[in-house]
Image 1 (tube, rainbow, N blue to C red):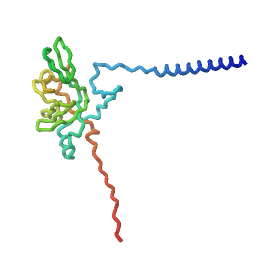
Image 2 (cartoon, rainbow, N blue to C red; image 1 turned 135 degrees about the vertical axis):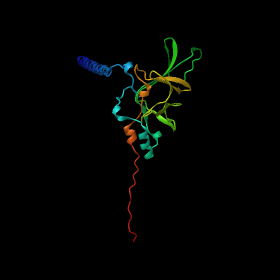
Image 3 (cartoon, rainbow, N blue to C red; image 1 turned 90 degrees about the vertical axis):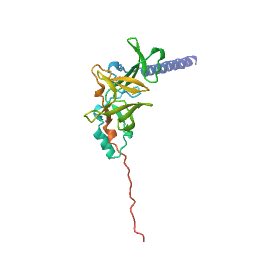
Image 4 (tube, rainbow, N blue to C red; image 1 turned 90 degrees about the horizontal axis):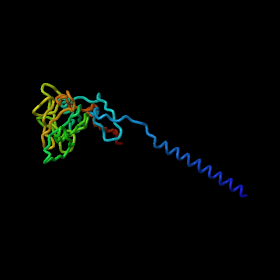
Length: 220
């Protein structure tokens, strides 16, 4: 009887060790992750949604917003404020700060050659909305409380950034209650080449209203 009890206990220990080993193996596999390439900061010129996985952008879906397209939308009584807008290139807004009285309400602060710089980056294909439409152009907002004026380019149909004091592809614009110099963040880039664009799906979509007739019967 003693030998039988010992055998049962030994068998139970073997089963317990076997089960424990299986769980450990399964747990180890749960921590294995496939390697993923690191993001290249130099190539980070695209709008990335605030998620862990980057979404590829199909640039063929975007078309330049022009005066002709604006008139087409108006003819179909489509409010441009209900259309999603984007920019096709990155914009980098910078301004020098007085270190003695630096006040920053948006963007980041960094030192460049010993100077305190406030920098705001708007990546390519960042979504924006129309805040107002007037005789000067379209005011597009990419964040609450601030907007950038886009006007028809001279002799062209497309809309571009409006500003003053152009210098080597950069321009000054009012933003966030201050004056910022805007560039594209690239060596040979020019703000004059940055276009206001829309998605074809956003322009072509329409609200569909359906009414089914019940018919009429003769009254007897």
